[in-house]
Length: 257
Image (cartoon, rainbow, N blue to C red; front, side, top):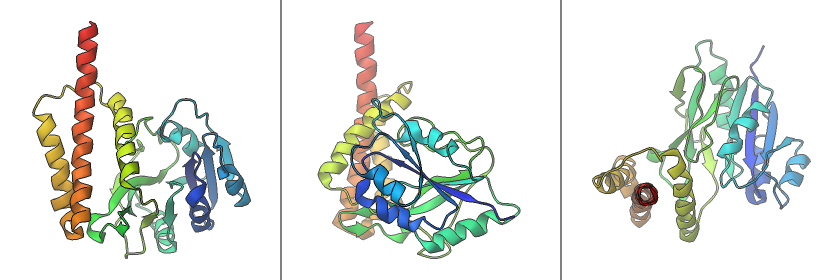
């Protein structure tokens, strides 16, 4: 019997690209939309596409991560593919996923390639953003912190695209204002995850420098011209702000003590 795949999508006010996203995954075995009490037309669009819709309380959550495990366990298929509401699964990738799990020696989870847009340009093919989004549902848990990957029970591998169409397309092309706003929001959330870190002065230099190197040199950002330089600098600034916020939290705690 062929193995089945459920697509799981976490949403909050995600109407902008949702119809495109759902149209691209309609040929999978099941689509589950886990909504965090949207106030726009997100749920209406999901129901128009015949999705299974479940609700996770928004409360004070600022990212989808606290709802990820609940969403995954709301699916019914053996395998789960997690897709964001602004991402497109191309038909070629869908076929590669089914072919992969049909193999008797397949892994329990796979990092899949995502193609991002930055300042109106898709990041070059040598710099795919690999995300752990495809895995066996049973036993998988997603930590409730931003920028984390799920814990999968079993071997995890990177799934290399057969061709340039076997990738997930990320449609969101955020403005610089949005990038900086998210930088501030995500670093706030990530402080909770890394609060126990005891960073010293050197971390303010080496962490931003390493992220710049990974993006601009190792990831080939230099081939994108000025866009690549700006993107690499943003990655470096993110790390600088994160370390500074962790230090701030520690210093404020010590002053209160």
